[in-house]
Image 1 (tube, one colour):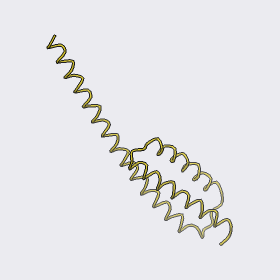
Image 2 (cartoon, rainbow, N blue to C red):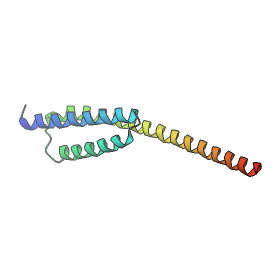
Image 3 (tube, rainbow, N blue to C red):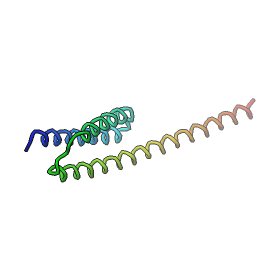
Image 4 (cartoon, helix red, strand yellow):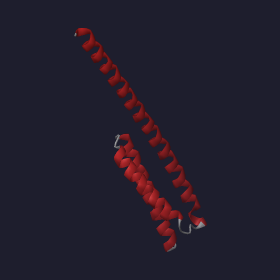
Length: 108
């Protein structure tokens, strides 16, 4: 294996590691860290694809792309779930405020 192939394999492994960390942080609702990791992922991906990639790496690259796509879909689903939960929290807060306002108007 050439040095260039080894470097590309290391970069691919790095992308997977960042993607897995993003998924774990999303599962923990640590969205600030998810954003930071997404920026790191973007920088690493740009560095990887700015250079030459050997055809010999194609199978590994395909596996990495599939895995990253799975992680991305999971992170999006977790994001939607968190967004929906926040929406329910905001709705509950609005209902409480209305109840307090109604009580205050009717009790005074």
